[in-house]
Amino acid sequence: MELLTDIVTVFGQNRTRAELYGLWLEGCEVRIATTRAEAADVIDGSTAVAIVDRGFGGDGPKLLKPLRKRTPHCRAVVTRDRSEGFPGVDPEYHLVTPVFEEDLQAIVERLLGQVNYRLALVEYYRATGELVSKEFVADRAEGDGVRDDPDSDEAAELRRRVARLRRLLTEYRKRLDGEDVAAVMESVTFQSAPESTDSAEESASKHHPGSCSNCGRDWSVSESDPKRAGFRQLGARVWRCIDCGHVQMRADPSHQRVSPYER
Image (cartoon, rainbow, N blue to C red; front, side):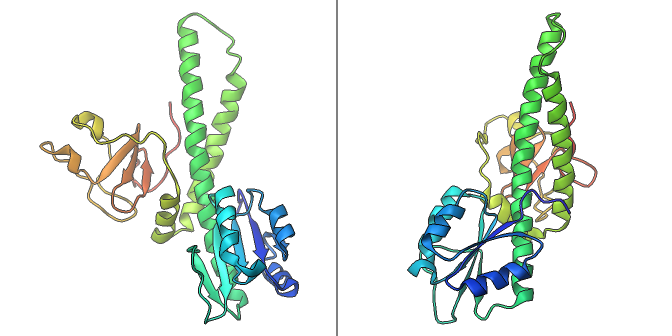
C-alpha cells in the first residue's frame, strides 16, 4: 500500500535496543537518535511515529513537546519500566519493557494508518479548495471572452492530485476502525468552520446524510429547531458529527466514503 509517510524515529538511551527496533520495523524508514544532539537533527517535522524511551536524555517527556510542536501529526509511543510514570505529556501508547516485536509492529502500523489518513484528508481539502478557486476564476475569464487560461495545466495537475488523494483515503479508511477515525478527527483543525445560524438553509443542507457513518448519530433536522441537528456543516456537502467528530463529504449511496470532486 502506498503511504505518504512511513518515517519512524526511535529516541533511546541504548543504541543496540534502538537498532533492534529498527530491524523489527524493516518496512519503515527508521531513524535513530541516542543523544540530544542526534535528536535535534531528526526533529525536522517529518517524523510520523516517535518511539521514546522514558529515560532518554534524562527526561523523555521534554522531548515530546518540541517534537509535537514541530510535527503536529506525529504519534508517540513511550517505553518505560512498569514502575515509571510519564507525567507532563500524554502519548498515544505506553509500552512496558521488555518490548516485544509483535506488539511494537502492531502499534506502529496502527499509528502510521492514523497519520497517513490525517495527512491525506488535510491535503484533500486543501487541493479541492485550490481547484474550486481556479475553476471559478477560469469560468469567469471564459465568460469575459478570455481564452488560453495560463493556469489550465496547474488545474489539470490539481485534478490528478485530488483523484490520487481520494484513492488513498479510500484505502486508508478500510484499515481504520472507529477509534482510529475519532483520533484523527480530534487532531485536525478545520479553519473557518461556521457557527450555528438562525437560518435552516444555512445550518443544514437538505442533501445531508441521514446519520453519521462512524457512530450512527441521527442527523435528522427538525424544521422547528434546525440548530439541534446532529452535525455541523463545514462547507458545501461537508459535514462534521457533533458527537464523534467524524467528517463526511458529499452524500453518496453509502455515506461512508469521501466522494470524488465534481464540478
